Image (spheres, rainbow, N blue to C red):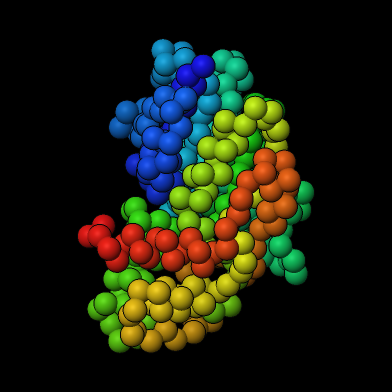
Length: 289
């Protein structure tokens, strides 16, 4: 049976990563949409689309991700990260559609001394973090069968992200300053996309919240050093503290996620963060992306 999969936010990093993997899933028909073709804030339009295309599963990659801008644009952030997600849940519940929604490590406050598990209490520090947490709650209330995957520090060969910024700055400057007291796990979008498709096509769906990021942990400084090394760039990376590099929104100081649940339930493979970075750097340095 051919399964129709709707990917929202398809022009972003994750949506493009799913687009790259889609040809490997010959038993699925993919519908890639973004705000110009399907506004998920419009519940009626969403209902019409899923009915017309007989959608089997919806992968929600749409999000407001401008973390600092969100501090001054709370209304827009909440509309996309909470209200639109509620729409998705209500439509999915009414139409009996599987939903996989992407959330974030920013729902945590960063005070943990070990990797965060799915049942740890969320305590977001920013408007963005609050909006994503409220989106999780709204989705679970509207559609108890939904799967929520929290991820972190996403990068890819698509769009704007930390890796591409470091490669650009590394080619322009002799030195860059990068925060060294925030610890997490970089996640290659291609790996997260593969995990989402594994969950989407699994014969025995298990709803709930899951964590997925690459294995291991590092600081933004460590990440930048490795980017320069793999790309063969001689730009020096200087560590700075969060206090020396203030931002509008507060970030969690520690946001490493435990992946044991998704490994056990869905048998998802979780590569180390260096492997994903090596693959991405190879693509970026061998192309003009």
